[in-house]
Length: 244
Image 1 (cartoon, rainbow, N blue to C red):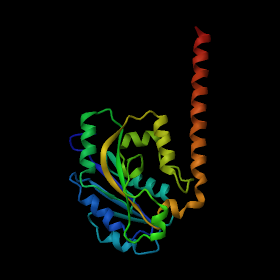
Image 2 (cartoon, rainbow, N blue to C red; image 1 turned 120 degrees about the horizontal axis):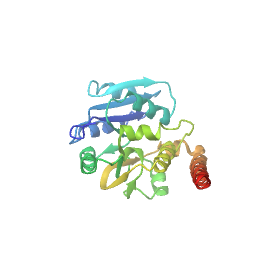
Image 3 (cartoon, rainbow, N blue to C red; image 1 turned 90 degrees about the vertical axis):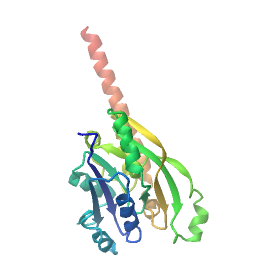
C-alpha cells in the first residue's frame, strides 16, 4: 500500500432514494481529494434510482441486484472495490468537500492507524413533514460520527474484522464496529464535521422500526464474544502456569 498515492473506493448502497442519490454522488465527485472509484449498488429499488445513477456513468461504477438489505449491499461493494482504502456513504447523506483529504492526512501522520471517523451534522430534509419535525428535536446537532458514513479505513484492516453481518435489518454497522473494537483496531476521531446526515420520512430507523430489537441482540452477541475471549485467555494463562 502506497500512502503517498492511496486508492480509495467509495461504496454507496441505494434503495429507493431517487430523490437524494444525485446529491450524495455529487458530494463525492466534489471531494478535494479525488477517490479512485465510486461504486453505486442499487439494492432492488422500485423507483427511479437506476435512472439517477446511470446519469453519472462513467464517473461511477454502477451495479444492480435484487433487494437483499444494507449489509449484503455494502459487502458486495467491498468485494467489488479495488482500492487500498474503503469509505461508505449512504445514498441519503452527503459529505463535506474535504472529508477524504482531511482523513487521508491522518494516515500519513500515523502509518499504524487502521481507521478514522469524523463528526456528523444532522439536518431536516426540505420535504419532511412538520409533524415528524416536532417529534425529532436533534436536527442541527453535531455529534461524533461512529457511523459508516464518516469512516475511512484501510482495506486490510476492514478484512481483518470481516464483512458486515447480513442477519440484522438495522444495526449492522454497530455490530461491525463492536467487532473492530474487539480486534483492537487503532482508531481516531477527526474533530470536525465531515458528513451531513439527512433526517427524512423514510430513514432506515423509521422504515425498520419493527426491527429495533436487533440492537439488543447485537449488544448481547458482542458481550458473549467478549466473555468467550476472556474465558479462553484465562484458560491459556492457567495452562501456562501449570506447565511451569
